[in-house]
Image (tube, rainbow, N blue to C red; front, top):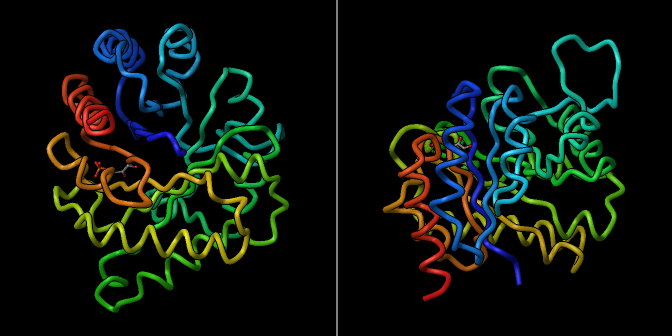
Length: 257
Ligand code: 13P
């Protein structure tokens, strides 16, 4: 049974004091929720402090990006070893904003995936088509290229594979207030699962597939309630503590109903 996973991607938001305040308030709000896993991915500058603050809570930490090397002359980069050292458990790999603004391609993302597996971090690999690709009915081809491009040829242990997370984030739905339809998302998740199954067989049964793109407290269960979907990657709605707590409570309530 895959545990529902809700991941907050704060992107480039929140100073250290704002991040600390948020986590203190959130941990009180969701202290009773134990049927879902909650992960926060703050900017790197807040990770060390939040690692301490979340120690005795149910909240886990993720990073939004990382380099693939352990150390070296890579000005401005953060290594998987540094993240693991802080107690970070998850790392987002290949978010569409990184692909678009920082030219991250499959070749580079494969290195990052390999590094995440090597350092015992759980990668959240993001895939998704843009509007032109969707209009040209290219969604499945794009997803296949992105997914296999970042994974094929890697030597992934069964344990690491079972823990891996994939996020389907259609680019046109991100930050637009215009989410994909739950039914469409269910179809894409099914396609992603079939790709995994073809290549990696039953060792991918534990892989969790999230949806991301304009998720809100009042639409979240449309996605988490779909067969094959295991949670969400949340941007804007994760920035306000009341809104994010409402979203988590909606999912938790649906899971225990
Ligand atoms: P929004 O929830 O703001 O649409 O962002 C989604 C996203 O990019 C999460 O990674």
